[in-house]
Length: 177
Picture 1 (cartoon, helix red, strand yellow):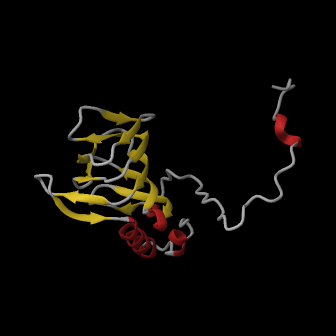
Picture 2 (cartoon, rainbow, N blue to C red):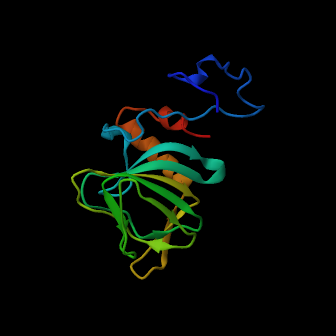
């Protein structure tokens, strides 16, 4: 490590001139991802909302911030693929587990795990960053398949909401990679 006398040692480094490889797409940059502006949160259920950050139709995958201002519920479901979550604020968990995630907590959901996601009442809204791969398989009260929700459903839901609140569907299209 070079000896540094204060400041940002890298200031003199020249940026790479050829940033993208052939056929590479630019990054999806979203400023202030956990924004307070509720227009950016798409209703996922009556009480829980999703802020889309990145969407890949070809991989059936998306990244979002799940948000609930108060006690909330996402329908019972399971994922045939893994899901990753990082809690930004508030409290959330699954009725089927004894842990409750709070700010700074990470959750890895194993493929095939069924659960009922709930947001708890808390002085801060529940905001959790999720990376979802593959569909959500909706479950009935007995745990039987009752439908599905995949990236194409997510895209349609997000585009419709963004049009409705005046942000425009193009804002969603800009997140597709």
